[in-house]
Length: 60
Image (cartoon, rainbow, N blue to C red):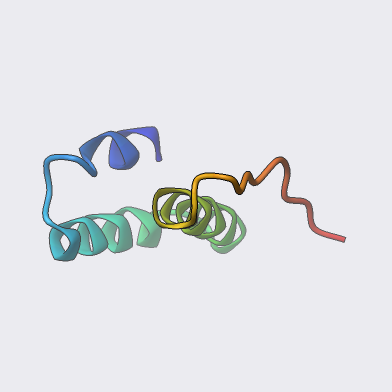
């Protein structure tokens, strides 16, 4: 996942989506869900207003 996140600045959005999707499909379903959630958080951090912070995400 770190590799995919580090590619974000150099790849266009569509290519990043395809790269992320391909990488996620190589993972087992549980890990895939966790990593997809991480990717969503990274996306929200980059698009949400500066005053907001995601401190921790847990499953009940």
